[in-house]
Length: 169
Image (cartoon, rainbow, N blue to C red):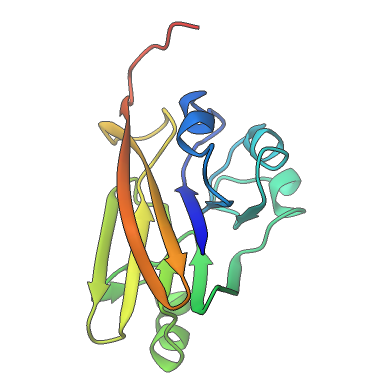
């Protein structure tokens, strides 16, 4: 069994509460748009997987890929930053996605937290929304879940607070 913490669209700002919420996870997955300093802060904390997003520069791109396809337990996972959404997938991935659908499709980019099963592909679409302060979203969010063999379970949406919230440090 693996406990996963899923984050995206930090845009260079990592809420310190992420470390608390991801303290008990086995792996952290970041679905792109890290921004400066986030990769360096997360990677020593827990085993880590990530893809680069459209705002990420060469420093992030040296350590991540545009698309990442892997097995977690018995689950086929495809992670990419820009995937569109069920029923309207992004053109660069749509054909490959339909030809070889994963069990989980992880993405970011939209800043909208959405978990939805696509019955046509048999794929669980997971977008954790945005955890950073940059963008139009109102609430900063994360996802936490477990993969146990072939099962995806115990999904939690974690609200970090409003995008405009000022933290007292």
